[in-house]
Image 1 (cartoon, one colour):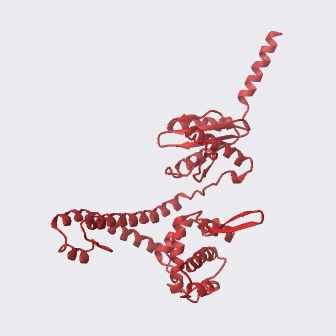
Image 2 (cartoon, rainbow, N blue to C red):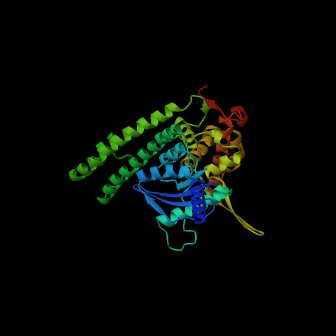
Image 3 (cartoon, rainbow, N blue to C red):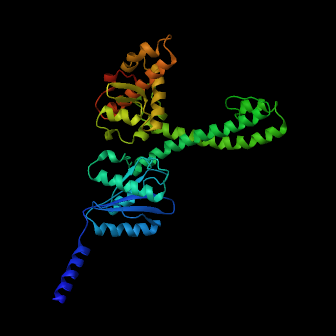
Length: 365
């Protein structure tokens, strides 16, 4: 009798060991030298956090795939890019990258790696169960799209670096009583400046000039390279650089199903605060791609100058072309034009509309 009970318990233990879970959910808090993981088995409570090195984590994640029919994971977007995501997906893990958020919603003042991983796992549990609002996921570009986007973003970094170093030179001049504007380091301006400042100051500014010479050279090369990727046929006012930046930040115009998704991605939609019978319109959400938003605002201003017969410009001309209109009113009109221009570009690039339908004047034909 005792032998039979022992055999039954061994059988149950073996069955439990061989039983696969329906789903394993993993909240990942990723760092440069380690990954903190909180695991949820099926619908159970979160398990205690575990810390792995990257090598140990790769071994451990393969084990999880043998324990469950599906393994889900998530981590916040950040400096680690999409390499970990692509590695997990290649192994068979259903991973999502989410927007960085405050994971201490109750503001308890207790916020560390383990608590972050636990909160991510709990939100992922709700997300897998069907609550798609539990996580704000980030679209992962293809490697080719990411490489192209890096080109335009590196060019923007070079531009900002030129501004930063040039500002340092102007600051040094101002500290000695010399107020200079514009590109003080260029040959024409520099030759005149040398006659007005002490020799020791010239020597210090030469350090900045050498750095600026390299940066401006690289910036010009990056700008030309981007401009050459733009097609010859494009709307007047949409320069090659702006075209390349917009195209790379969007990645693929086919990703949008309707105009609302396009407007939301730009962050140029107005916010709203409503409760009961109270309703207040708020400024634009600025939720989305800031680089795309900046390029579209600049494009809208150029359309006013170069596309006077465009339907979009005609619609808003009573505001942007009215000298009596306030500065705030013109800015609001430009924001509306930028949002609509994003929609028009989407319609054009996806074949939903032709340039003549939008009233565009095309160049490069």
